[in-house]
Length: 246
Ligand code: ADP
Ligand code: MG
Image (cartoon, rainbow, N blue to C red; front, side, top):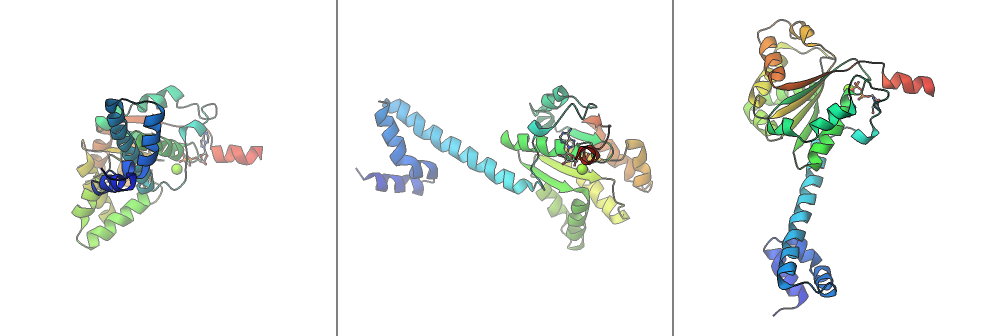
């Protein structure tokens, strides 16, 4: 029988890194609590499992690329009355992700669309999903670059690895025809396969115009809203309110 250090190294070489690292403490705890062999065996497995999950969630949080940290706990429903806490909480069973449905937050600037998208995204990560935050502008640039390199398909495939793609602020800035076409390719690839959380200042009736009435406008809107929860948000800008009360 080897020493604790040798045993820990054996665990590490088997890629049970958490057990390898925590062995000393796990042993002491088992002794202190008079664990049975089975209890101890179970505890080791559970420890490795929990630590791996935690690491994965941490990694997913880094990969998500949130521009700022916003949580749902910070969201004030007394200010934003066009959406209820209940409506948001209902989304947190994440059946919308399992069903490959989309969330669409529509409204003027400052009403909390991005805040909710990030807050829901954070919770989805906690629940084990992979999420990527992008702005519409950043996304269009990324796709354009990939297209120029002849790697649009590859890029879209890599974006489709995420369970949820947040596309923030669609509609604020004009898009060229190639950009609209690339976006269509993406939306098409994600349709009924992954979830999109979209924030936009444009109502659907404005989209045809935004897409210059080209032939991808209707299919894009169609695919996004087909399976979706749509939240029309109004009220006054939270930024303005803060400014006034300052
Ligand atoms: P939008 O994306 O609709 O333009 P944001 O979500 O970026 O608006 O909100 C603007 C700022 O106001 C952010 O700092 C956000 O955290 C804050 N904010 C907006 N609505 C609320 C709210 N109801 N409760 C708390 N903070 C809010
Ligand atoms: Mg926003």
